[in-house]
Length: 533
Image (cartoon, rainbow, N blue to C red; front, side, top):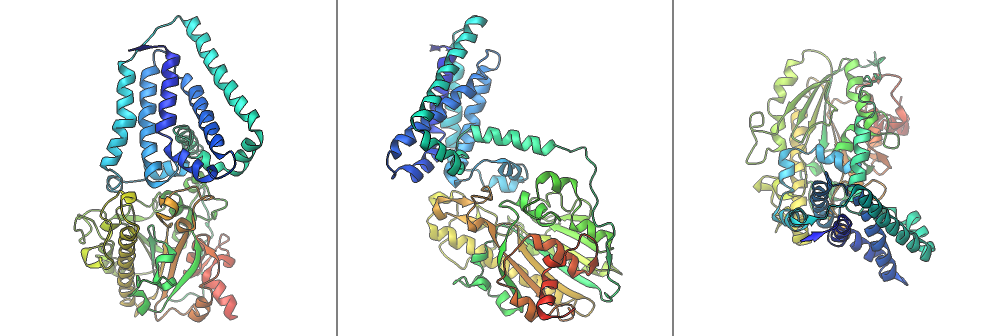
């Protein structure tokens, strides 16, 4: 089969527009199909996207790179189409950060025969057809003018569409920005460019120190032992402590805990939320470059002499624990509670020995959970916690009944409840020697199929509440003298965010520093409410 380079460009653009942009057209249909002239506008936008693809592909219509570049775009489009069609996610810079932060076990949960089908039908098959096609060779001058004519035609069509429906296009640009995130592969490619630009911007800058003046208050005469549990993918509305009608917190309901019901996350993915929640910037001012180039609350606590240990059963600390002792519990080499999956409770193994080895000073232990990480929720808990039945035992959530997805997810919350009760038991066993406290905060939430959306990672400004509304829980040991639990409980329905974590941790350890803001410290807020100093 023979064709010209322009014909190959037009054919490739047509194939990608028609078959790799189903998520884009689905969202267009949901938004415009019922409106007057809705189907015409959908067709118009589809043609506009086709012309954009033609213009983009023309940049590669040079003999040396033509076939490899277009084959690569077929494969990229196939992978992006799979995730957008299957989980209704968008491929922005934060999602790419999440991807490169994913370990092999988490990535394996996303592999499926459906993904293989996308790669074969949308990637390998058209790539093979392109490679076998004989592209007619033209002189350099003739090929140049041929590209100019095609580009001019595409631009003319785009301009005509915009002029014919100028009011619609003006409204689309202003009010429907989210729809543009589904254009494949243009959005993933732009996101990759943006991600690389941000990733390597300022990488040579020295780490900026904060809290160098930090010291423990002279009034603090007792040793603190604090366990901070960083949860994974837990939704606030799935905790029975917060009013959920299923008993997902039978253990914690027996404890004197305070569950804060109105807390929102820094981000919608682990790669963003975890560094952000430990940073001093707060969500509005945080970005990944600032997070990488500035010390965090653990550095401030270290300046004050707090002993710290980070134990991880997730993909990593995302750089947060780089300057403190860190232990990996994702394999049976360290974690004694592995049954094919390494369980969060294994992070408690040998923890008492660590505490006993610290002869002086306060202690902070951070336990980073695997928690409810999807899409294979059924793997996130031991068999004994499969209370809610039947469960979805697949990573292809769109093929499962909603009840099965919810049952598997709720079972994972049930196991987190049990794990947190073990943490409390551990701390209670140290009450004779420390002021003990547990703070639990999930990094982000999760979509479970509401409005057809699964998993997490949507841009924050379009993310549903399910991805941003997270549980936060406090437990105080019997010797914790610096808290009026009744006053803390009065704050449980107040609006809060991950921004409170940095300052609450400094407040818990009674740290004096210029970076501390008592207006964001939950304990100080409770003292102000109770009228105590």
